[in-house]
Amino acid sequence: MFDIERWQEIFDTIRKNKLRTFLTGLSVASGIFILVILLGFGQGFRNGIAHEFEQDAATSVWVWPGTTTKKYKGLNPGRNIQLTNANYEFSARLLEDDIQFKSPRIFVRNVSVTYGNEALVYQVQGVSWQFQMIENENMSAGRFLNYQDERGMAKVAVIGKKIADDVFSDVDSPVGEFVKISGLPFKIVGVFNETEDREEERIYIPMTTAQQVFNGGDRLNNLAYTLPPADNFEEVVAHSIKFKNKLRTYLQEAHTVAPDDTNAIFVWSAMEEAKRYYSLTDNIALFFWFVGICTIIAGVVGVSNIMLIVVRERTKEIGIRKALGAKPWSIVGMILHESIFITAISGFAGLIFSMGLLEFLGPHIEVDYIVNPSVNFTVAISTVFVLVLAGAVAGFFPAWRAANIHTIDALRDE
Image (cartoon, rainbow, N blue to C red; front, side, top):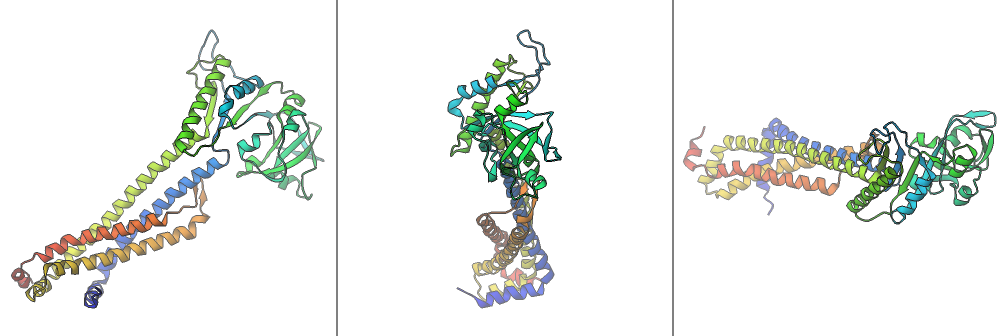
């Protein structure tokens, strides 16, 4: 039942002790503010990690060669490993049931690229038609390479959007235009866009063309695969690690590499790396929770101390109330009411300010590994209610002390 006299008492007490009440409320509000901001940046960090892994297919596995560092089966260390078409084709057959998409990659070096009289300094790479799915290339114009291009060793090219903007700004569309690679004309059939400008500075041509036309032989620089998606994250990670180990074992045997020579052949799994980062974000979130809760506890302790002071100051008043027949629980309710009111108002003020700040500034924050810091509203509001409960607990002990003061002792208090 709404007791207007009780509220009048609370507001009278607050008016008489404005500074003390303000500082107490500030400590509580700052606790909630710090917790929400920390949780927001924890989520921003998680968003940033997810954004980094969205650039390529989430289940991608990449292979690149290194140099042997250990003697094995009579072969000396220091051998440079060279991936070949045979490695790609055999691994694709060996692990066919585990692969969704696959593509080799060849870096075409020592070639000149020109458009008209303009020399272009961009990377030329030979890839398979499935490379689009592995790199998550979005086409802004035209198409990507296809199977017929690869089979027919076609002289076609797909360029990045940055190249299109920098070089072909004077034409309606670069699709249909020709660039010359070492004097040979390649028709542009598509323009792709990426999340990073440096990845848009690439020219893709069919891998067969790259090998046959530019004397690549059967040499490859990278192997890339994606695994079928699954609903369970841990299941995908386990599958990815198993696939990675199978692939590494095959390549080590094919190139006579010691099983424990980790520098000869590198196999990188996006899912395994993602698990490491997400584990890190979980640990950071736990640390943020710890810091925020400690800050809130400090505020609640402040409320409890203030309530003890309030009880001390109002000891004589409490004695008079008890002499007039006030029940112990009415005394407890009086102190608790004030404690809960200060905690709730301060907590919601800190919540509103922190949520507003994240809502206003969050979408504009995009630094390395932090994207759109935000916090789940349900979690935030639940934290405030827990804080109010903590405020009630903080006020209960001073209130219980007040209720147990002997009436005579209270009346004698000066």
